[in-house]
Image (tube, rainbow, N blue to C red; front, top):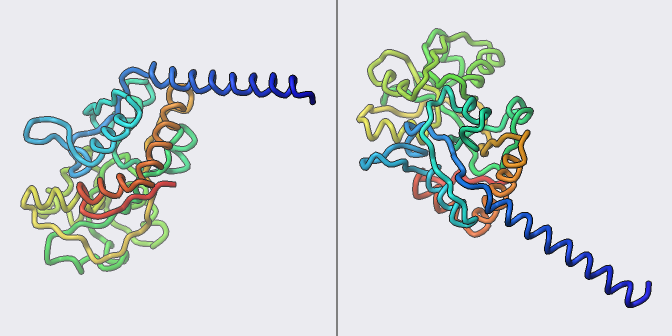
Length: 266
């Protein structure tokens, strides 16, 4: 290839690269308001503070992603049982609520990279930690869990894989922790960070049962895979979470809000 032809080809390639970057920047700029659904009742992940403003770990992560990308991300309080319906209809763009990646969800949504590793545990009244020291101890007990979450499916899997029968009591809100404290149910199966935060703030006197975790799961942000907007946002969130993990910001946010580093980006 002659020198003139090579220069011409390089010029075309550089021009295409510049155009591609300009289009990406324009697409990001044109996203407008990005709405992240939270239920506002899951401290310390997301809740309403004493000023009636959304606050918590998830809100802090959203603010950091917004700052790094020049985006207007707004956390929109949404009832948990309608969260994915709101996502499907386009009323919100994602769900900022420790959403576990599952095969079923991956078939419908495009996920960002994971940002934390989550595991559910059994919360019982303090002093009764050994009342559930193994899965066999669940026999005959009544266990509360948030309906529609992966935790509910994990309880079904425990029944099947461990061959133990117990009553599963689904809740639309996180009040199952309170019901443990008053003896209405034997235990609540939920995120222990959120559960103990509720217990401490509400004087519920709960503790994490000695039974080990059934499984650890990666959490990520889901977006609609059938829209360019959803796919672009998933990529933006993935790239930014990777940056936040690399520079230590994500770890710092975990320690600040959750008291422990459970960050995991992959």
